[in-house]
Length: 373
Image 1: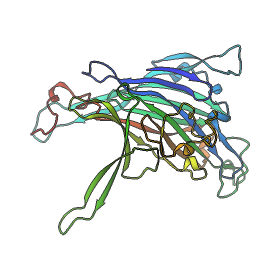
Image 2 (image 1 turned 90 degrees about the horizontal axis):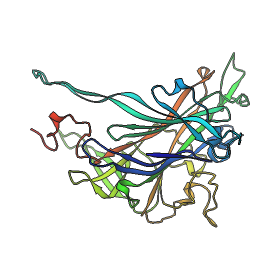
Image 3 (image 1 turned 30 degrees about the horizontal axis):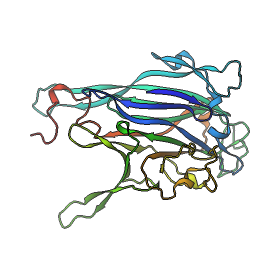
Image 4 (image 1 turned 120 degrees about the vertical axis):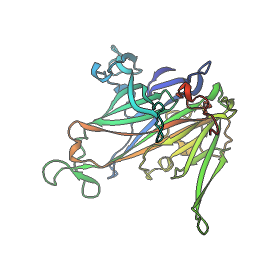
């Protein structure tokens, strides 16, 4: 995995690969991955921001304190368009590891004396902190030994002192009595994922939907899952039993199953005020011009529009780009002062058939592949 730093997106990860135990070489997953927008509309309609392409997000890269990167390394980053051109380098990228608790556990059945199988996982963590206005965004990328990737943004800093004039229904009283109402607002965070599974951009997209029907007399309900190939560009809405995966067109695991990664959205508060925020995931055909989910800075041609919803126009998906939208509606509380506790939003990329078994399987269970008596 490599990285570079862009003038609007900030940190960009390149050639993200995963090498499971027992595999002879790394398996490429992503060609590039980056934030694609942090859209911040206020509930009273007074302010609306596109933090990446309108509020100098990248130039707000913060110098990290050594205590913020325990056991790791803080790297210097050259910031394009730095506010102080004489000092463009900022010690602002942390690379470290962090415990994540159980990776798995398999205990004994009653009467058995076998070994308890358990492993405590550890993640590779890469992150920056970018200051935009009064907010500070912790942009985290976590990589687990089992191939799972977690992308999340944590918002902290302080509430905007200019936005304490909201009324009931638009804000929340902060401070003594019911005088200072902090204006509620949303953080709609978009990520842009350019998949390159097994080194190829020609990936497939599939949607899965599960439906439960009542059982007959004396029978339990039944659930059936249907797979639908996504052949053309899609603006998708998540549901309790709907999910998507991106599938390799060239690579298979040792069981002969195509490798894929499942998109697992985290909790999201969907903001319906703009067309581009009304969907949870978009799949578009690759276009170098299309880089940001809203307020896209490049001119992509007459009638192309400047937001991701405008780019879903029926093109066949031969080189799919995934855009993931996770929203957070921030209604302030007394505890948000001061500094504001971090609130997180994000999603997972979970390996699905990347390996034939759990890549952390201990040797004594290596034969447990398929039906085991």
